Amino acid sequence: MRIANTVMANYDNTEKVGLFDGKMGLCLFFYNCSRYTGCEYYAKTASVLLDEVFMSLNPSMSPSVTDGVAGIGCGIVSLLHDGFVEPEGEDILGHVDAVLLRDMPDKFLIEDNYPAPLFSPGIYLSYRLRFYPEGLDVGCADDLISLVKDNLEKCHDSNTALHLSFINSIVFVCNMLCATDSSFTAKTGEIRHLCDLGMEQSVSNKRYRYCDLVTFEKLNPDNRYGIVLNEKKRVEGNINALDLWYDYGWWNILYDMSLYKTDTDKYINYVNKKMMDCFYDISNVNQKLAAAGMYFIKNRLPL
Image 1: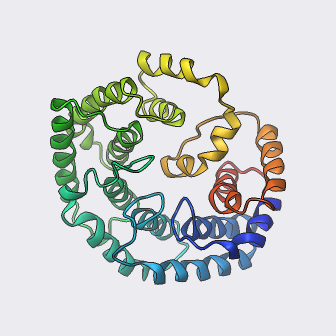
Image 2: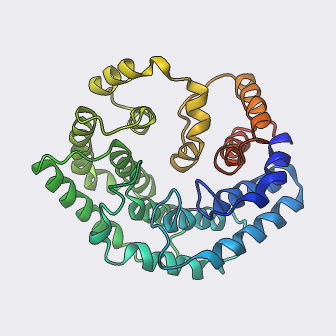
């Protein structure tokens, strides 16, 4: 249990509360770790962290999945769905609903200036609808679809290049809606087409990270996009695939995928080496090692 013990030894240094960079992510890891190992102490630690997350919620917090309200909301939804916490968490979800789902048209591009912008309200809503819809007006999904379609059309008509990370988040929302109810397949068809067009604009205007190209492929497994393949070949020469998997570990968890797949031993050896670095870079624990641990748990690898 080296991963779990390394994270446990360093979690006190965590000040941020977000999913990707703080206490919400550690909370998810420790709850899952407790069930995976049978060690109750991890769950007790997770409970303390969750209380600290709840107390930190405030109106000025970032709306994003990565470091703010939407990520905390997705985390709580996951904990409720998996039976780690009691339904009192619904009270917190009511707060998150109010922050993210009220006046949603004004929040469509709220993260456009972020390094990796997301449609965070849509991601949160898709998590709620699929994993914990209690207390949620299911009609809001149709409102969401209309909002996304209208705004993507405006962006396309004005030749506005959105970041590929943002496009990916919308594709993910479509995937989640369709997994929740097959009737959404037809309803999201036009959005997917607009996302394809948006992807071409993103790539042409270099509004992407390498991981966004890989993610776009993973989220669209039934299609082959020449422009994505060509751009990947152009820039991937200096990319270490295991670095990609580790550095963007929370994207693996959020989107339920793996940016890179390899032999079990390679994952284990790589993470063992990274744990040596954790003594010099605490952010590796808070932002990356816990996500790697979540991946290990999901795939039944030794912690």
